[in-house]
Amino acid sequence: MSTKLSRSSASKAVQPEKVMFPGARDSYFTSQFGFTAGEGQGLPTFRAMDANGRLCEGGPTEEELGITKEMALRLYREMVQLNTLDVIMYEAQRQGRISFYMTSYGEESLIGSASSLRPEDVVFGQYREAGVLLYRGFTLREFMDQCYGSVGDSGKGRQMPVHFGSARLNFHTISSPLTTQLPQAAGAAYALKRESSEEGRVAMCYFGEGAASEGDFHAALNMAATLGCPTIFYCRNNGFAISTPSTEQYVGDGIASRGIGYGIETIRVDGNDVWAVKYATEKARKMALGDDGKGSPRPVLIEALTYRIGHHSTSDDSSAYRSKEEVEDWRRKDDPMTRLRRFLESRDWWNAEEETALRDETRKAVLSEFSQAEKRAKPPISDLFTDVYDELTPALKEQQQEMERLVREYPEYYQSVREHQGSENV
Image (cartoon, rainbow, N blue to C red; front, side):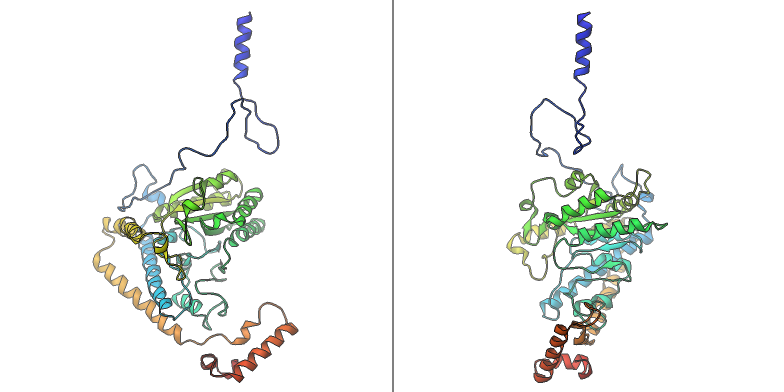
């Protein structure tokens, strides 16, 4: 009798007791003392296509990935256009023709994420989302007008180059301060959720791993998680925040592990694999809207591991903190465009002649818009004072009058202004 009681007691003893405190819902008591530091194997990285352009065995099928010849060619052409735009505009800045520029070298597969969004979805970018805009229909002329601050710029020349925005394409204007777009995206997604539209819309928010070191990152993820906001947080973890390598930014397992900490469904993908990026974004969008059959609208975090081939911007010299050999090694062994081109060639969807023709055609198109942009007029100086108040305040009127006086009094310093705008706009 005593033996049976002992066994029964032992059986009951091994059942862990669930914690009932409201602060943690899925914890159990243990008598084993120990701190947790997240050590051990890191989260896996999803890949659909290897560096040689071959689809991975055991992964999603071509049909599941949404691969068609038309889609593959479009993605590749957009990558080439982005790369060509970057080459020409980077050199333009070096020649002093524009003040600033940022390239997307090595991160062109980001375009795959744009292919899984809907036009009505709103996008919050950081610095390297020009490819997303290209895919959504931002024209070369619009790129040039923004970088040159010409009269055709929807921002009226009041933003730094590459700070793009387009109300037509539901792309919120990029701002220089780091990470501000994350809480904005969470808030916008909450507003979209309250719209209760039939189709549903998500807020897509892009940022780098450096932005994840800012406080706004944590506020945004927690807000989105607790309010069930249909936000897709897309982290481009390219290894460097300006001049700071990721090894000096954090000790934990990348950025993906932080999403899990906030109770957000998370995936890490090969950011150089356009099919993995496309597929992950497609699934994330369904999850964000609650269309996956597993719940209501909620945020999703995608961490895309990649490598920044170019400098952070034209204000940066990356050779000061990494070797040129390291950069060239990455360019040679795993370039997103090369990977996709190999995929196309393996299916006889592309050849050397088509490659040469595309490169020549794209370069001519970019250079044509480039030369025209330099000749276009600048916005009137009056635009410096508008769009803040419904009516100009007395202080702004005084500043405007002072500016007009200076232009008239010192015409030699404002000659280019007068030539571009005409005296009636000054």
